[in-house]
Image (cartoon, rainbow, N blue to C red; front, side, top):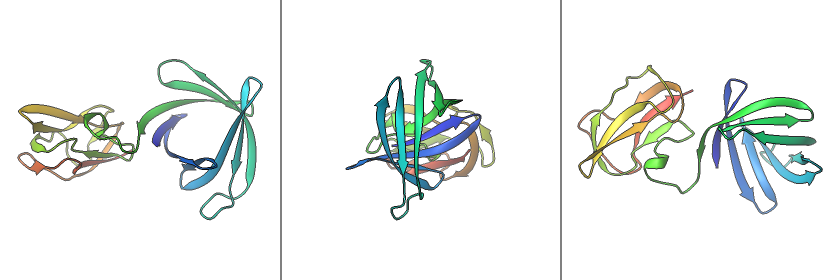
Length: 174
């Protein structure tokens, strides 16, 4: 699973992978093996590394989470509080209109069709959920939206182009 987490105003890409021995977490190119265990009213979080490609060292943290129901969480790590918001999550193997905007900033066609409009240009700032391309499929227009606020890095289609399911249409930077 790939997440874009907003932490104190900065967005971070976080990859989470289930393994036979727990979870592997990758943040900013650094990888850790993670084990979480209940510890009173908190969780004990053990981060280990040292395997090839993993961040070296072992660290243990006491973690407390509190959700507000709006997508934000207050996280306390060893007594230090931070607010975290999930900006975007992508699940492997998910396809379709709900997953056309991915956490990596790639907007792909959810189905075959034809590009009707491209209302953005390279270098343009876009808001989260702003339409970046409109694709007609089965006589319906589908607005494909930015998965998060950012800047249009590249357009790979123009009005009138035919597209295949999964085809890369627009790339965004944070």
